[in-house]
Image 1 (cartoon, helix red, strand yellow):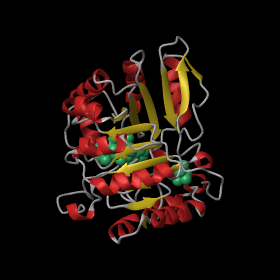
Image 2: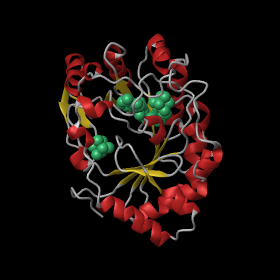
Image 3: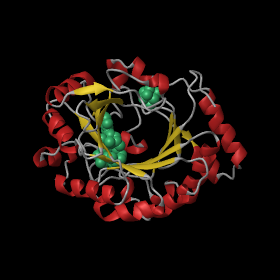
Image 4: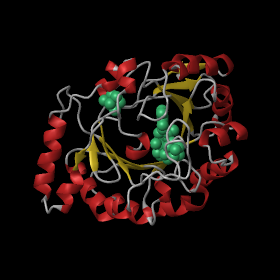
Length: 333
Ligand code: SAM
Ligand code: SF4
Ligand code: SF4
């Protein structure tokens, strides 16, 4: 199944909650996601059976990779039951989860036993003060590091460590993060700060470019570029010349990769998005709860993918950056 630009549907990201225990300034700024913010009531969020049914249908349409995300996915009660259901679906070769790591130290073994293959952990700095300021709930960095260790010990590696870089905030954390995980077998992936959503006050000036990031690391620990592993891989890969591992840089702003974007996303209330920067999703939950059979749902999804034209990052301008878009915490990264 290919879209109008010849891109197949290969990956599915499923948000299991719109809630989070962090308030990362670039994602869920406190001024917007404060006490009065209305998160989705439980009845509006897809149930596990509904998620598993959709995942099965998507696997039938060619999806091989499923990633659970949020909000913070580990806040969803009994998540391991969902993982066990997804792990049994034929065709899904890669079942992963993106987390802020805050609850991972306790949960890693259970996630692994339920059938999760790998985790990605977001960690923006090793400097405790910088990290606490970025998560904006005063969460200590050591607990995330403990979570990464627990996930490694449970067999959920190699772990990808996602670092969003924002100018004037955590540029000084780039080299220490690379150095800390060099030789660990885990892969640090630096992500250019993106204009997702409409609340994070994005400005192009705040983006530290992929080339700046690569130069900063290369100056201390020499790097050489690597080929990508597969079509649709979003990170530019580099290896350390001394053989001590690799890093990735996700240049969503300065080197858009829409031409290879093979991802669909489902928000926690069951809206289907074919681009991270979309303003509107398509209602799968209405079909699920309205008695549609699998063939109806397949037709609905196929129709949307067939007509898909998305290439937001290739077309980004100051004006599009200001336009209303779905929040990252709503559909996951
Ligand atoms: N709460 C989980 C976490 O933080 O890993 C999963 C959801 S979070 C929305 C998924 C990813 O999106 C995280 O790695 C986060 O750093 C990234 N992200 C959020 N806002 C971003 C932005 N404005 N630019 C780039 N990446 C962003
Ligand atoms: Fe929460 Fe993840 Fe967004 Fe941070 S990036 S506020 S941890 S959803
Ligand atoms: Fe894919 Fe949209 Fe990102 Fe382009 S901007 S890579 S189409 S999610």
